[in-house]
Amino acid sequence: MKLSSLLKTSGLFVAAFSFIQCSSSSSNPVAGKPGDSGTSPDCQTYCDNITANCTGGDTLSTSNQQYSTKANCLEVCKAFPVGTAADKAGNTLGCRSYHATLAAGSTNAATHCPHAGPSGDGVCGDVCVSYCQIAEMFCTGSSKIYSNNADCLATCNATPVGARFNISIQASNERACLVYHAQESPLDPASHCTGDLMKQADAGTTGGGSVTCH
Image 1 (tube, rainbow, N blue to C red):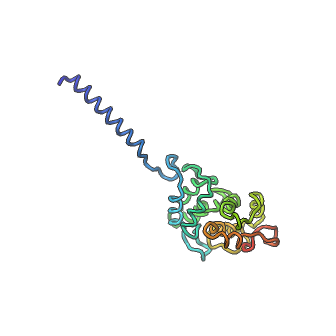
Image 2 (tube, rainbow, N blue to C red):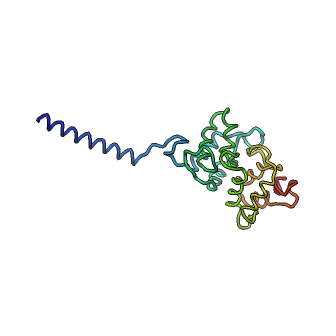
Image 3 (tube, one colour):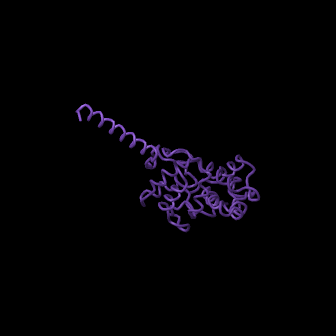
C-alpha cells in the first residue's frame, strides 16, 4: 500500500474512533460533584447525604439531625424549588444538597446541617418562607391550618426566632418548633398540622406560635 493511501486510511480510522468516543460520552454523562452545573439536584441523593451527615437524634440540644427519618426527608423535599446543582445559597434543593454534602465530618455538621435542612437557616431559604412552603403543601383539607400564604408568614414571623433548627426542638415558643412539626406533617398531618401547628389566640406574646409551639 502506498504511503498516501495508508495515511488516508489511518485518518479515516481516527476520525471514526473520535466520533464514537464523543457520542459515547454524550449519551453517558459523568455525574459531577455538588456545586457543579452538570448535575441535577434530586431528592434521593439529598436525603441520603443529609441523613448520613446530619445526625444526633431528637433529645440533645447539640443534635445536628434535620429530619426524623429519611421518609420524612423524601416527602418534605418535594416542597423545595429544585434550582440547580451550582446553587450555594437561595431557597432551592440545589443549595440544600450542596450544604448536605459539605456537612460530612463532625467539624462541618454544626455549620452546614441547618443550611441543608428544611428551614434553610437563612442561607438556603428564609426560615418562615421555607416553613410555609412545607406547611401549605402537607397541611391541607381537614388538616388545613392557614387561610393563605400571607396568614402563614404572618404567624411564623410573629414567632420568636429562637435557636437554629434541629429535631430536638419540639415544644417551645420559637420558629424551630414550627419547622419540626412541619417536617413531621407529611407522614402524619392530623397529629402535626391540626394537632401541633394549629393557631391559638394566645400563642406566644405576639400572635405567633401554635398550640404546641408557645
